[in-house]
Image 1: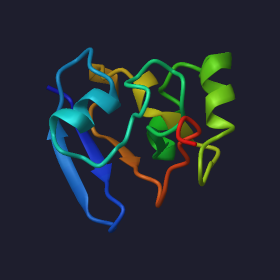
Image 2: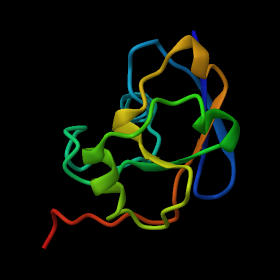
Image 3: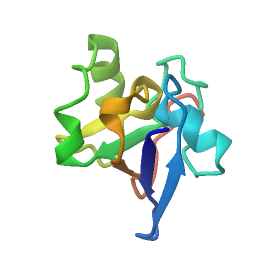
Length: 110
């Protein structure tokens, strides 16, 4: 099983063995990682925003236009930002490290 490393808000890293085919968001939720996902992975918010380590960012498929639109709303956007619901675990991503931003911006809450 591929390993996913989550860089938590306090700077520590939690490594998880993740089944192929799950999203980063699903892996986080199954392992009590504090990654919000307010829209439950339906690509309707930016609360599952993660910052992908440069080494792995180039291995990911390009973001869709819908994902890019949602990322524009994310707090702390970087050039390696992606939505956790859109990163699907594969063998090629074994060892990926994703950082959790310091905060999220939930546009669904008024």
